[in-house]
Length: 217
Image (tube, rainbow, N blue to C red):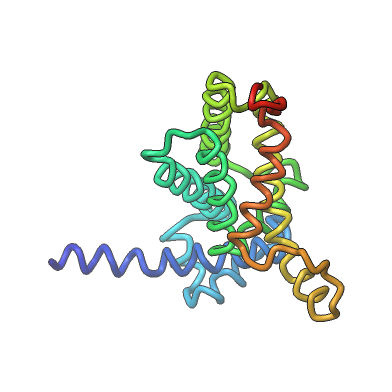
């Protein structure tokens, strides 16, 4: 029991540090973020920050890897038991939006990192990204074999899913501003679920096999 309490006590500062770091990195990028500010937001001193996580590069790696691994794990969990390629691809799209919505600072952080060419992403984060791409590739291949998807470049299809989710989440404040001024089109999807389905429809209409009159493909 004492060991469990000790483990929990150690994990709480680490959690606060990672959460604070994610916010600061999202706001300022890797180069602009300071360890002093991260420590202050986490309510710890620099010595404790280094003890629980490490230097700035290690901290950044931990934050980005955790986010990508979280998306990967959630996709795998939601896909379990789903066989239909159409439903599986919709699930991937929805999962990206759901996870980004729950952690809105991460899309901003990752957008900054993409603009920097992924320079600061550690190998663990890159490996998880590649695994998520592999999931999309597998879904597309299964759908093509089943005759419901035409042959498309899997990486480009994956980038459509990821980039659309990232753009939607990073544009939320702009959307609110446009909405307040009555400038959003009347048919704008009203909530996250509607947005996810609409995005999936756009992707699927680009890869689904068109049916000829009479129901033949």
